[in-house]
Amino acid sequence: MLPRRFRLFVLAVFLLACTMHILTDLLPRLETRSSAGGPGAGAGGGGCPCQHRAPDWVKHTLRILQDFSSSDAAPAANRSGKRLVSEAEPRAPLAAGRPSRLAALLAHPLYQRPGRTLRPPDILFNVNSDIRFNAKAAGPRDWTNEEEGDLPPTSTTSIDSYPNWLKFHIGINRYELYSRHNPAIEALLRDLATQQISSVAMKSGGTQLKLIMTFQNYGQALFKPMKQTREQETPPDFFYFSDYERHNSEIAAFHLDRILDFRRVPPVAGRLVNMTREIRDVTRDKKLWRTFFISPANNICFYGECSYYCSTEHALCGKPDRIEGSLAAFLPDLALAKRKTWRNPWRRSYHKRKRAEWEVDPDYCEEVKQTAPYNSGTRLLDLIDMTVFDFLMGNMDRHHYETFEKFGNDSFIIHLDNGRGFGKHSHDELSILVPLSQCCRIKQSTYLRLQLLAKEEYKLSYLMAESLMQDKLAPILIEPHLQALDRRVRIILRTVRDCVEKEGHTNVVANEMDFKTNLASSDR
Image 1 (spheres, rainbow, N blue to C red):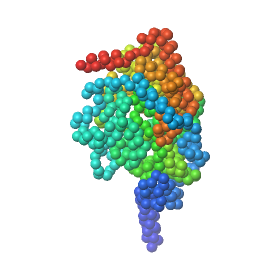
Image 2 (cartoon, rainbow, N blue to C red; image 1 turned 90 degrees about the horizontal axis):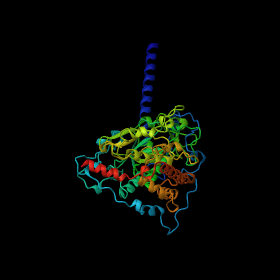
Image 3 (tube, one colour; image 1 turned 60 degrees about the vertical axis):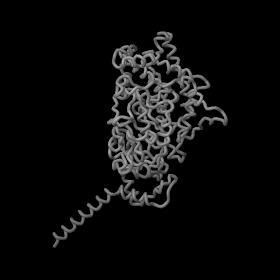
Image 4 (cartoon, rainbow, N blue to C red; image 1 turned 30 degrees about the vertical axis):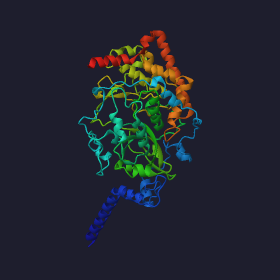
């Protein structure tokens, strides 16, 4: 009799364990349903409450995931009860009737030069080709909407009916990511800030957490959440490779790149994301879902998985479930447009004690000039453009760069991954300018635009402040960072003047149009 009771007891324990396992596995679905059907909608609307009250047993289960330690990476504004957007006072808006400085800049002859004539080899995608842009076929299944609806437009559809992300893709050419007056870019920025998010997944690799967000129109964007307030500077004892990535740096980089007339940064917009409705409830990534928890302050937090800063001590917390972030439009899928990754010749050592070769050899550039692809075409000049761009932001983390394979070595450099800029407004990192000071070469167009941006009526700080006010998270940069831009423009111009005194104007300032003419002649 006793052995029989013992066997029944063991069987009951086993069945109870199985039941608990099944309930734990179904927890994400149960939580999603309870949030979707809960009473009351928050400011975000749409039938899903922005501030979801989970049952006590759910809260208890979620709290097991964290140790209630204070989060160093959570925005200080969230813990102190301040608003998410920086409290720093922005520059006064334009007075009524006062002309826009940005409009005046774009009307300047330097920004009115006609675009280059594009031949079929200069265009990334030929709209009349047999390539069919199908997001379901190109993207991973977990990143696209599973519902059967209208597929994205194909080559047989009118361009006007294409979604804005696709218009952006088919506008890419050998010289730029988008043309100066492409209306699809402004429309795409609005999409990034407002389109409904249909699914979310963690981006693999990288030192810090990034999310891939897919919209209902099949567009995709890379989301970088807010980790620091706008006022926080990088501590002086931090190495460049251990610094946080800043969402506002990604936003400001896009606007800076456009003001410099490079147009090599994919469109980026700021967005206030509801972590409950727009991340947790739409993700199918269990690893991401399981890192959500409720903080002691009753804020929704999560930390995901990455190499660094992905733990409860560095969790990302909302107020109570809203968090700022940058959304950068995806480039075309690699299956449609392959890209080549290049090691930056002036890459840093990424070591606490070792120094790179360029840091100890003043003639390092002479060796670079003799190495392909820097020994011909505009690649070296394009790299100097990137140097100017990075110095203005204070970005020391440019170890690699990418180009489109279709265009070979005669193509612009894509300015990707700009999250480590605008970290120090009180310090100008002159080592970023070493490629310019060692090579003493710069494009004539870049030099003329920098001279223009140094003038009072076209001062870069005013142009950036006006341009950034268009973003939903404005103000993006605090005043000291804007002032640092003007100071750094003067430093670049002084470096070029020193080169001209040493090498002569014609040996320093290069007319890149001569290179384009030679390229066109060689392709005939």
